[in-house]
Length: 500
Image: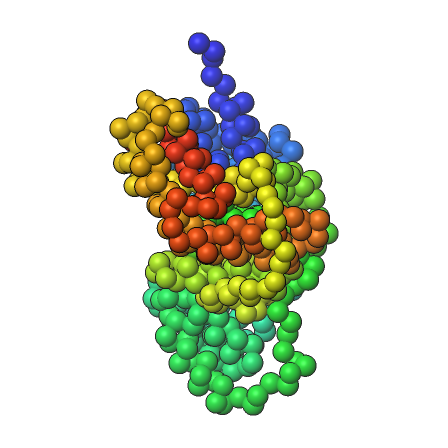
């Protein structure tokens, strides 16, 4: 058995994206906490740090220190913290993240330069308001870092003090900061932040309150009352003064929708020199927003590496942000139907890009004339159609008696039952999926996908017009066979249910 090397495994671990790192950490970490922490301190100075590696190192260090190191702190750890304070390889915020693992009382008498660090970090600006404004005006993507470092790490009482210091602020950047605080777990913080937005008494405050009323289930009703009150108090805005709907410098791409109703959204943007933002959103028609990955302050090299990893695996279509917002609103509507809360990372992304018009709204397909396409089974093997077979409990139950059979050995009456199930699935699920896919292609920069668009339009019409089984639709018959084939294959591998 090969000998384990904790340092080498830590290097592999911190090279993963943050989500994978958290999942794989138990497998990669096996030495005692003090050994692992010493190695992580060493990696700060020895590694060529990109955004991913640095974030992973800070996350691991903070977790280990909070879980395993309690007062009195060992001398070696104090020495490492002293060395860390003097390095220029970490920013002030990075150092604050590490120190936030401990109470100030634990450090103030033992850590050289702790008082000076705190003073430099907080007092060289005139006020907390100046600090937030300076951060967001110079680089809008720092909104996420402020969320991770200040909002997530601060006690609710400290956040209430911050809000009190900022009450009366009218700047759009500060209103976006308040909006994120309305999603805090503390009711006191949520309500104080909402009140601070209302007290701004500006047109931007109305728009922020409206956004909260549509997206925030916890304080939505209160936000609605507030924006209606402000609308009556403030003069109607001049049309030319209303900001645009989107930031046209961001790169936005989407995939088509697979048979599970899932699609992926990619957003990339350069905020400052060598400072990039990457976002990947997984959407699902049955759930709405299923997952979101948000990475900020990436170097150009790190951004290109991450984009290549995510985007190369799927076919993405470039779309305009107004169209993307229509799609996102549709999936927000699905989240709303399920009673799911909107992820905070999505709100941060919305505010980073200054998106307007984000709210739960059903997407409506506009029927138009098209020339039907004569297609072949080969056409139906293209994505997304090749994924549009039925993966359901009912089909599994029907085919369990034939799990050791080939598809051609399944009786015709069973095929007819599967076909009826598939037709119901197609009418209820695939018609809206095909409509969204048609509009994605039509609103993208890929004009050479006319044949795929016509194929989707043709399949949609066949599904809508088909009433009886056995079907006359080649698509229905082809997908019925594929449903039988793939379900039998799953059963033969020991899967007794689509949930396993």
